[in-house]
Length: 60
Image (cartoon, rainbow, N blue to C red; front, side, top):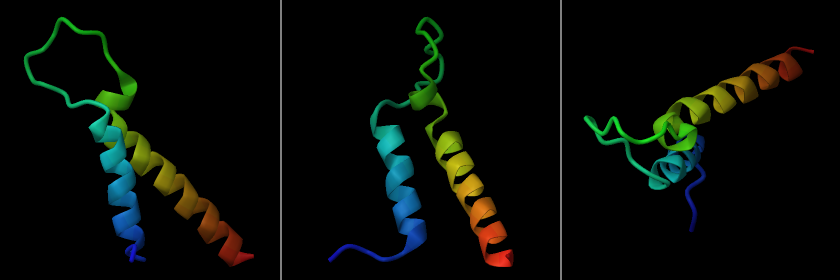
């Protein structure tokens, strides 16, 4: 049975970004891949926007 923990959902979603590739320090010859290099940041930003919208929806 799937976990109903929202933090677990967020962690699995962020892990999905990381599975697409992992940054290797010292590997400077490759092009920047936003999904690989900034996956956690993108997941955190989307989650933050969702919480922000939810707070305003509950305040009305």
